[in-house]
Image 1 (cartoon, rainbow, N blue to C red):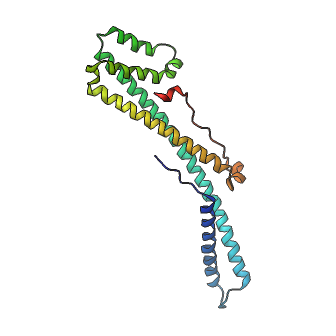
Image 2: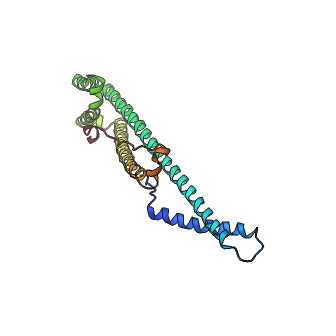
Image 3: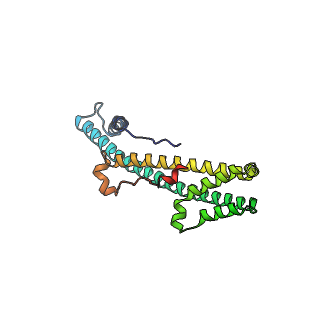
Length: 213
């Protein structure tokens, strides 16, 4: 599972101080190239320090903005992945049903059971998606010949892997949302959130029953 690269205040402060020091020496070096005296006057040293601080402020704000945009992109990517995984799960479940129907077409009660799992409105069908999948697994368990079929076994294993991947993706997405929302309400993002058009993201929510099986 991907790990969030957090930027703590300690890391930000340390990076800022190091940047200011490096910037100070850089600007002092530039100044020394244009003056003839061996010692740099105080006014030039102060100017170098101001320029270094200004440079680091601009750099820090730009870096913070880019970091937040990267978080937004990552969350968008995770959400897209969840949609793809769920679509694959539905396709595998449909494929498993088709194979079972062909394998057990002589069993009318199995046909009725599978047909029943597909009945009702589209909304009800979506809500009972995992329940239908459970019925498929139960059907396979009740028929040794069907259970021993490698094709069915492979499909059910793929469905289970897909469900685990979906769950992991949902958890990771919500972790990113938690971190992103806390970051945009922290300094310095909270000051520029209006200019940067930063808005808190919503957590991924599902019906509890859809994730149990």
